[in-house]
Image (cartoon, rainbow, N blue to C red; front, top):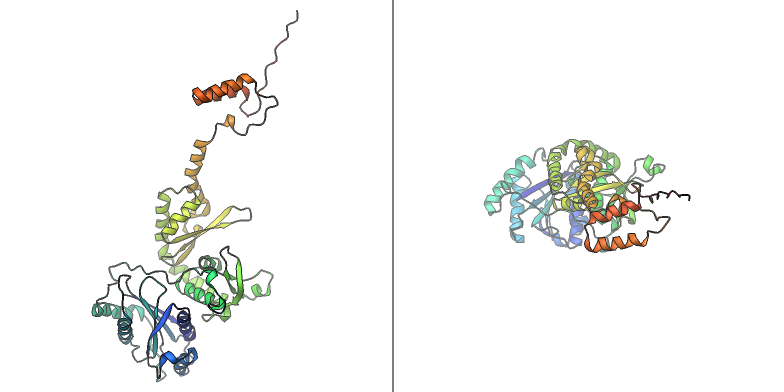
Length: 420
């Protein structure tokens, strides 16, 4: 079992994320602890009201939300009853057994997993300390639960869960069924919570993998001057569709000033994944891909997207790598010259260039201009004989008699007239 805890400042957003998944048919509510009445008959506002009563006891505490996901090995097929027992045991072991919480079973990945939403504000107005809760309480609880329920142990086994988010199919975004705001919110929130990026361009490199983009507008616009930010859906061609959504209207408030603070944090946090990415690229280059298309396809198999940035002249001027395994983004120049667009293209095109050169005709037969005079019939006869019976070298030597080294018709020597 793998446990992941996201500590946040918007319980409303965490709850809405899971409720939206239920509406989309990708999740179901399987457990509600600390709620009076029939939870299945409660609407979103009624569920939120239960948490809001606790949050009001400590309004100055901004970090008041825990969004936990418990992920199980793909080989394990667990019943709702077992997942309920695991959720209750886990929450009790990390010190949240007396807190109200809701557990949802999600069906949007290839492995069983549940999401749990709760708050650290207690009924007496005090708060539960969240410092190192993942490394301390959660890790111990994970190991105990693996033993108690006979689960596949995460330690010593490479757990490979399916991606937590998938590319949005624009044709599936039906207004009223899956509103634009909900589609954007789900993707943006998942990306900014998981990936490490150090600029808006790098963030967009990830978002565009899921048909979403962040836009500041033109430099002359008021939105750009005031550091505003809008999020839009993209179609399969990369064009914006639907109504753009203000960053301030999304529950995590992923506005530019907040994102800029994350850029600095991610700069250090992503360093540990720099060398593994370089090794992956080296491994792909070792198979000598024929061109950039083959290079990108080979990297994609390794879970890395290589995005070439194209200039106005239609030529690549840069490259960005999105490592979906380690959830990091790097520009080629950050990794070194050999991993820049120029370095990659010079490497992958070597084989292709050599192949083209070997298939090319000799210089004497390339780019020939139409002779001012037609080749005489004897030359044509020699050519036909050469093509049918003789080696290629002879034809070259015969044609060289017709053309000089520059490819221009050779000048015939004038015969000296003999005066009688």
